[in-house]
Amino acid sequence: MTPDLLLALDEGTTSARAIAFDLTGREMASHAVRIAQANPAPGWVEQDADELWSATRTAARAVLDEVGVARIAAIGLTNQRETIVFWDAATGAPLAPAIVWQDRRGSELCAGIVAAGDEPWVQARTGLVVDAYFSASKIAWALAHWPAVRAAADTGRLRLGTVDSWLLWKLTDGRAYATDATNASRTLLMDLDTCQWDADLCARFGVPPDALPRIVDSAGRLGTATALGGLPITGCAGDQQAALIGHGCLLPGQAEATYGTGAFLLAHAGDTPPVSRHRLLATVAARIGGHATYALEGAVFVAGDAVRWMRDMGWFAAHADLGALAASVPDSGGAVFVPALTGLGAPWWRADARGALTGLTTATRPAHVARACLDSVAQQTADLLDAYAADGLPVRELRIGGGMAAVDWLAQRLADVCALPVERPRGVESTALGAAMLAGVGAGVFADLGAAAGAMRVAERRFDAAPPGAGRTIERAAWQAAIARVLA
Image (cartoon, rainbow, N blue to C red; front, side, top):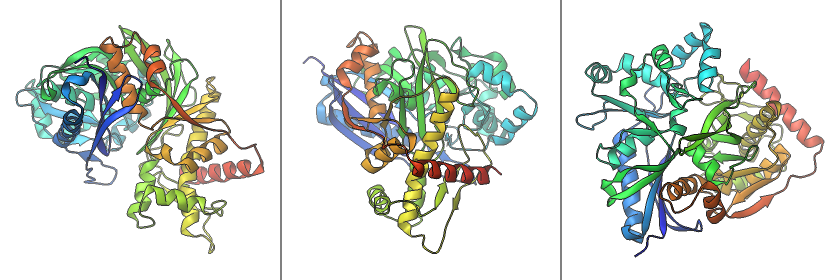
């Protein structure tokens, strides 16, 4: 049998998903497994590294059981970025919990680097601001506070990496210890120009360079998945870069936004690392054949997580209920929700910011709060688009994906608030699709990403913006006033 499918393994913050795509981008089989989070202290977010692996393996095997191993040409891997895993080189066992990207325990170290005046130097090398969001301060904290991690480092047994490294290690029974350039670019330890670990950055954060994985291309032979029938692993990228590829954003100025736990907006920036004057992030879009392309990124820490928080508060039962509730009122009645539950990301980068619900009156009802919750997603996206334009990279059309993008009301709201057309592809699993496209290129199924996008990406619906009016101006002003209160 000639292999005619590509298997994407998408390990996210709240679930691990496996999807088999045919070569036209249709989902042929899919399986997801939920993943738990722990919050042992305020601002701390941890996960069980063994659970990340077992959930991924379970999802993958369920799909392979359905379609058959023989039909799979290659595996593409995509993952939650910045989350860091620590394990023992000899046993392959985790040494500590995985520290999740949302975790803020490295804030004190980052504040010290900023206070010392070193942030411009770090940003020039990495394209990133100095923030606990990225992996370096998480690693430094673990080395200082977890004896097992420190002891492994001192004896040369420590292996550490973002989730792609951990899964590659487990999939290949320890034969592959690598990370792709997109994930490495999110650690604050990689030189953005050379796509190599930087000894000075490692020294500044106290990270032993010999514990870090090898940096490799995003497409090519990365290893053999002995745990999954010996299939070749030929694609790998962090989730947001995979989404950029899955949306077919391969030229400068083309942009995508993924709405999941957080919200992330990337615009392709070409072959040269971009420089932001408005605290956006320069990052690797992909590296293929040793050649890197770049993107400019804005990160919102809380999007879908705000919906989950409101659900946990008992205000509604499911995402669909929230959309219907929000659509039941013409506006938020003056209520504004700033979902800074784990700080504010771009363009403010304020770890100390906390959430706020303002503008409440005796007339405020749950529907108004639901509307304010979804409006906050659109307003934060508009803030990022304003920063992109100020940096000389205006976005003229936004392609969206992620779980929240399936809500038509929110997609239309994004178009109206951001005053630009919004396009949603067939299906909303663009992250997994991008991983499959990379695998196809790495396996030689497609000549390049342009060919892969032409074959596999299909637009489903376009949402055009309503004509601009006074209402948008008033809503933007109310949002900006609420942001100012939170920042103060």
